[in-house]
Length: 183
Image 1 (tube, rainbow, N blue to C red):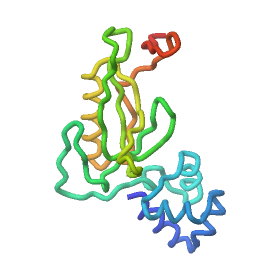
Image 2: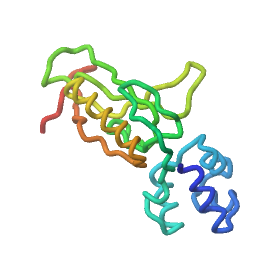
Image 3: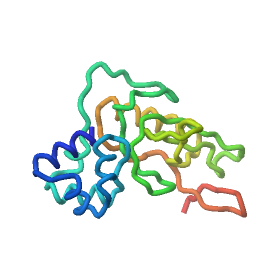
Image 4: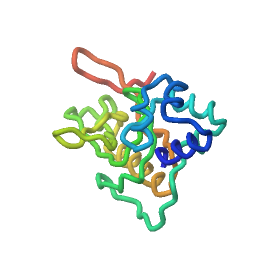
């Protein structure tokens, strides 16, 4: 898990949380949250860590291999120790997620309007509970389900990262409309 790996690397280098915070240009509290698994650094900070510790992204983000994990079915929770890092096609944020669901759209123009959006849940929750973060638009609900199945399979294989494979690009049409961008 990233949190444990970061702390181990920092301690092995003889760095305090304050010293690592200075290197990354963040607060000591941010380092503490990273090491407790309460927060996750953005891509820029991850790159800085990889360069500072002279390791690969895979080595930095490697998750432990906990045996006995069965691949979860769509819309089910996996233990939060099983997370995967995904870059949202919509927000461009890189975040670690442990749960996914599909939000269907209201429009029925197949092939023109995306039919589904894949949402990811990270380990942060608010007073209102879990909040989904948009990952990508999908031409069909089946494409979104295929993506979600692939993500859960990647989690079951202890892969630290996943690149979305089945999402489509969209463009604005009108004030509130969306359309699949084929160009």
